[in-house]
Length: 115
Image (cartoon, rainbow, N blue to C red; front, side, top):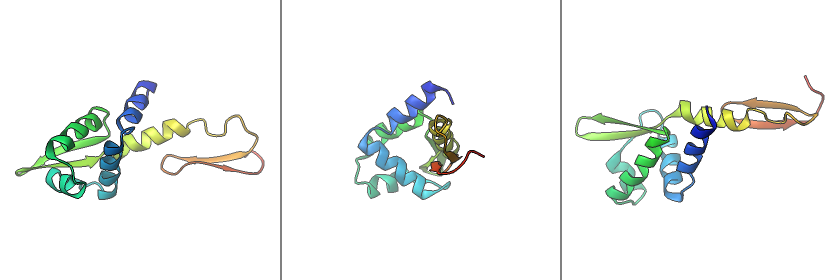
């Protein structure tokens, strides 16, 4: 992930409504949610949802896929994990403590000798 991609992703979720949409899509899993259900659950007008989904899509955080008459939106888990990995890439690098970082969990500093 490039710094520009990280900034784009972070900027996209740095809005309360977009963060709420993204968190709901992460919760929904790979199947995602149809636009109407997402709009209804979050009490958003369709135009408002569309505006915010566009920003998340441009940042490559969500995917849209048509299915019959509906558009389903889902979180891009690879992008989410790449962003978390980028943010924790050098976790604890300047400390003398051991650090266990994973792509999903993040940075968890641990006391003890370096291994």
